[in-house]
Image (cartoon, rainbow, N blue to C red; front, side):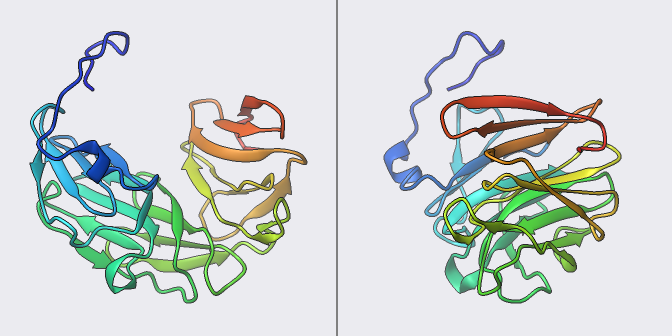
Amino acid sequence: YTSTNGTTWTKNDLATTWVELLSNIGAGMVWDGSNFIFMSDKFIMTSANGVAWTETNPKTNSLALVWGRESVGGVTVFIGDEGSSNNTVTVSVNGGSTWAYSTPSDTGVNFYSGICHNGSAFFIISGYGDSLTPRVCSSSDGTSFVELSTLLTFTNTFVGDPVSLNRIAWNGTYFCATCPNGAYAISTDGATWDEYEEVGFAFAQIIGTATGFLATATDGRTAVITTASANGT
């Protein structure tokens, strides 16, 4: 669907059916300044207008599940669950026409679920893997990610398992990373983090704003939208 005002939407049929595109819940789309880029576990497609789409690299270099995406300065990075060749990060520098795997330097991670850009580098956060604690990695070019930090208390006590979803956002001064068990962490550099917990909250999405952060979550009964101060605490 496309819309010029966010209110009235026009359905656009595709040659490739959405049933095939969205074979599971892990899929995503991003705008890189020139093209919309869509990725699922089976297809990668690009479009300049959201109406006419071109399939590129079908079933190649895509992720098993797409959980996050970011495009800055012509570099587009998709992150998610490992797909072919055990990749968790894939990057394109030509509008989604071709892709390459990017391998972070951390170990024991097979799932990245959060990504943001702070104006100088991409930052990604892992969901879980052989290690029980999430990792934070950064890259200036979207290709070579280096581990910066390990978040120690991000264990999902909500279900008794390692964290399955993390999100990370930047508001111009601070990073805020969240997970479904109510744990969250604040950092100015992505390497040193102060960790907190909001009891009863299961965080879903978070974005940085001019005055702080805006997040969606559930308290176990209802969905909520919560705002945070500039430093995230």
